[in-house]
Length: 264
Image (cartoon, helix red, strand yellow):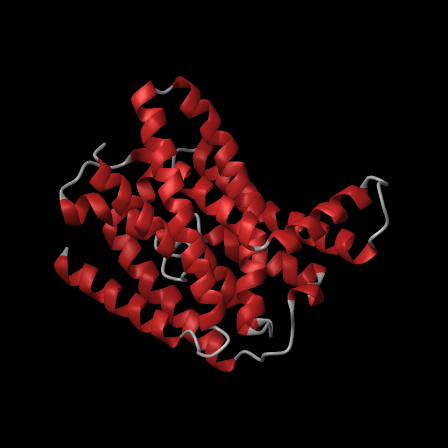
C-alpha cells in the first residue's frame, strides 16, 4: 500500500467516523472512485482503532468516570452514578455485538460492501437525521441516560453495521429523537462507540498477528494518521454543534447518495 493511499484512507476515516456521514461507506467508495485496490478489512479495523484512541483521549474525563463505574460494579470504590452509566453503556453495546456476530458468522458482511446500498442508506438515514434534529427536544445530557435510552440507541448503533448508515449518525439520530441536546447526543454517541470499536480492534489482533510485516506496518501507519485526523475532527464537531444544527450533514448525505445512484 502506498503512502498516498494510507493518508487518503486515514483522512477519510478520521473525518467521516465522527461526522454523521458514514465512514464505512466512504471507505468502500475509495477503490471505486480512485482505482486504488480495496484496502481490505484489516486496514478498516486499524483505522477504527486509531479512531478509538482519539475518543479515549478527547473524552478522557468521561472515560475515567466510566472506569470508576466499572470498578464500583465489582466492589472497588463507590460511585453509583458512574456505575449506572457504565452499565448503560454496556447494555447499549449488546445489540451491535449480537447482530455483528450473526452477520459475520453467516458471511453477510462482505455482501453489504456495494455502492447501491451505501447510496440508499446515505439518503434514508440522512433524512432521518434531519427529522430527528429538527423535531427533537434539547433537554437531556449524557448523565440523564436511562436503561430505555441505552437500549434504543444501542439498537440504532447495531444498524450501522450496514455501510452507508453511519454509526455516529444513526446514534445521534436516536439520541436527538429521545431529546438529547446536540452536543450531548454526540457525546453519548462517541462514548457508546468505545466498547464497540474496541471489540473490533481485538478481533483485528489475530489478523495482524497472521499478516506479513509489510501489512502490519501499513496498518500501524494508517492507524496513526487516522488518530490525528479523528482527534481534530472530533474537536471541530463538538464546537460546531454548540452553534449550528446538523442540516449541513443531512444535505451532504442526500446529495452524495443521489450522486452515487446516478454515477453508478
